[in-house]
Image (cartoon, rainbow, N blue to C red):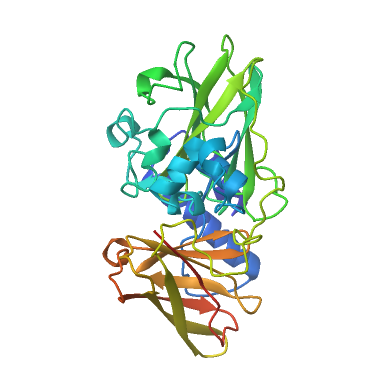
Length: 378
């Protein structure tokens, strides 16, 4: 195994699907050998992915500031770009780790047109579209040399990270990002899964990338392309930075505490409205068919308001430890710390008045009772 691993490390082939399959196979074989187990292999897709967190991507930054206080009307005046993004689609913030495209095959400029770079070419429809809007996004102050950090939550590894910074003269306040606005400053090449720092919580790996961007002042955008190594899956992000002095003053009166892993903490005790217009409301119930070491769960989402729902999201925590989703259908699954999240697929996103939609999942672990769901409609 060691000789085979070393042989892979010295390959000069360009990254591609064949190399990703070979590396995935090697890591799978290594895991089985380490366990001393002869078994039929079942590879389960990861339930979380990642994004840049320092400097934070626009969607992660909005969740970081307002995730525990998303009903605060002060966001509209104190953080208008996040407000607009949140109003466009709350799932963009809750799914901050899921902005990616598949099957791009390295042809990024064809898959992601000008003016749509921050949304990954409107991946997920219009979910992330507001991230493309230029304006007074909150910035992180940096020097001409700084460290860019990506959170690889599921230890996907990378065929490469490519980090760009906008050229001097670009106006982030008025100009939607184009490829011609960018200068490529770093191409990391291959980074194996698990290489990097261990985050304080949330799992995965923090990948630090040193960047030098001289001769820049004011508001700029750092653009990341992360080509994951587990399959042809590419993550994109825009991070707003400020070079030099004169950074716009942060507003006062906003959130005073770091957001927790539970985005519902600090909410009022009455029935939450999730910031949606009056009349939007939903609930979710589930039935559990348990067989001891696992269970199958059927979930029904019901429109309990007086308006048709365009889309929805569920949040929940497991009632017992050691439970994990192994398969999900008719929904997408992601995690945020200990919080589980499910979002609809295209056909069951809209829920008519008094209507219901359904999805389901299987779990490994001792789940005998249904979790309590928080339902967020828009």
